Image (cartoon, rainbow, N blue to C red; front, side, top):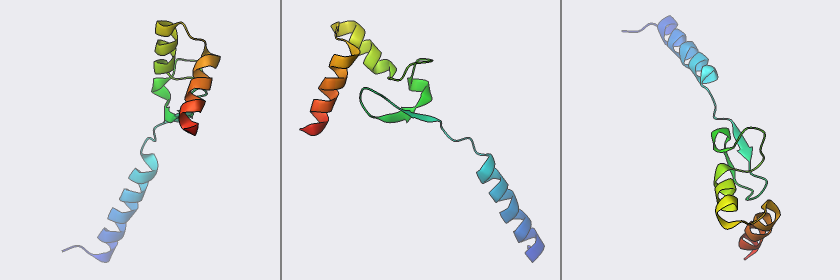
Length: 75
């Protein structure tokens, strides 16, 4: 049987774990507007890796892709 002190100790430990939990860092893509994990971005870039892959494969510029995604969001 747990005493009141033991219960308080358990609650205190759970609160410490809650604050120690690592939060996923997120960043918003400048092209799509999607908020996603920082691991989906290249270092020092403001757009996600997937956008960069589309840009390389299609030959489109970043500005053209931004316009395309904006048009998709409005319709």
